[in-house]
Length: 618
Ligand code: 4AZ
Image (cartoon, rainbow, N blue to C red; front, side):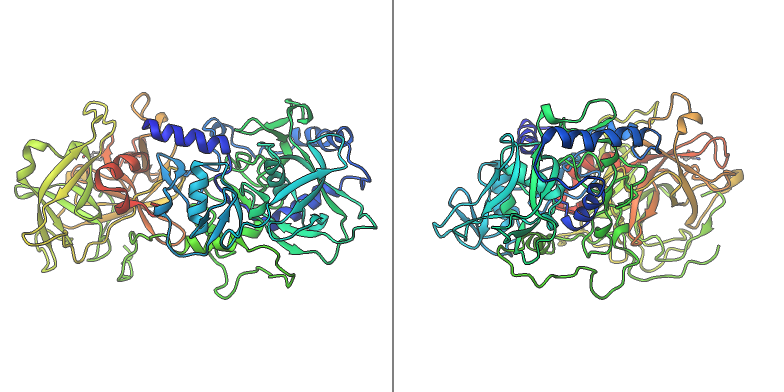
């Protein structure tokens, strides 16, 4: 990692809220539920609160099932871990971490906003990108700066500075107003505390009986990763059935005891029962990123992330694996817009609007949907167009290896398939299945450049990955592969999981070493704990095993360098593996071993350019 990246990372981390991913609706419900255990409070007392909140939690939870994946916790994921979550539109994902974009990298569309530094920015994204570098320049209000009032949050009636009833002064209003308790949850409380300078957010929320003299209050709704309450949406409160919003901000002295509490990556401790409930209690989201299952109000993404149930089918992708937006009814989202009078702009809507202008990549989607005929070792013959990313590397008159088209002029293959000294002998054959009878669509390219992974080890087969750049034809600016479609390059090792079904394809040998002249494919599943099969030879981070229980379907000699592809919930195809090695072919005790492509996303993007393979937030 470059020094600049490290500095930016530290800067973002210090801020610990460059991002936002939480909308508050799910939140208020979840919190209400937990608060139902409490007796209504007339005054704010840190001591009583800490005891009523923490004790039942710890005793209750030790007997309960384990929601948290402990091994994953050691990876210390936060809201900036783009292997687990999407980055904000003002961030980009580099080496698994969301880093600040430069303001000019933001989409141009959007409305003007004013920052606390007195400057106006042409879009919210630009302001947030600027803030990402200069945390003191926070969002003030929507629209140009008018030299008007400031925004402030104050806490009153508390025993100390870190607690009290919440009052806000909006930039466009002259008076301070209380916040209503009925829209108040830990999500908003965290943001309010951050605004007051408590970087770890809130310990807890409180409601206080309405003061008879001040029945008016403001409703506020945050998503959870705002850096100021000014970014949340304020509406005029009409009903104030739940009292006023109060908060106890997190301080080390008020924290729950170490024992039986969940330790967030940022150092905050939260009650164990609040981990994996879909609610970002930690502020850095680390309580929701390593989950085996989610508690009541949470929805589990395949990547082990809990999101609020309300995010399912809300029209925005929250799970990196996409399953929160599948099987949703086409028309309308279950988002009930309240008729309440808006006092500030909806910056969450503006954030979503910005997202819709981010560049989108086209990969992994076949344009002609062939119906796969029912019916590699044990595989089935492929039909034309079924594997539009499959390439053949020919040396002399033999198909020597497979390859995978990933866009532009670039082919991914195995390092052990290619030698730079033989570059001029290779030919890349595209859009064909039967090499005895190549079709009229078949395009043959020669090789311009070969890049072999610098840490490829021909003895252990570690880093068995290489890139081939095809030569452009004279007078052509780009490689023309009319019938080929790139497979998507996976950017996170959490996109697919053990037991997911994937497809291997190639012109490799059949059982009994029979020669194969037409492309064949077979379905295999991803296998974990592969060290059991290959003790001392399997490197989990870099390799992926796949096979079938009886070993009947497998890659074999000649399939090397070819694709192991997996489809996500939206039927988008990713190249999850490159055929690399294995003991024999088609033996259940020796599954096929593939180079785990997700581990090489950054290596690939360094060579082919980020924009060619980045699907989200370039
Ligand atoms: C090979 O020799 C080879 N069964 C490729 C894959 C496997 C075995 C051998 C996996 O290229």
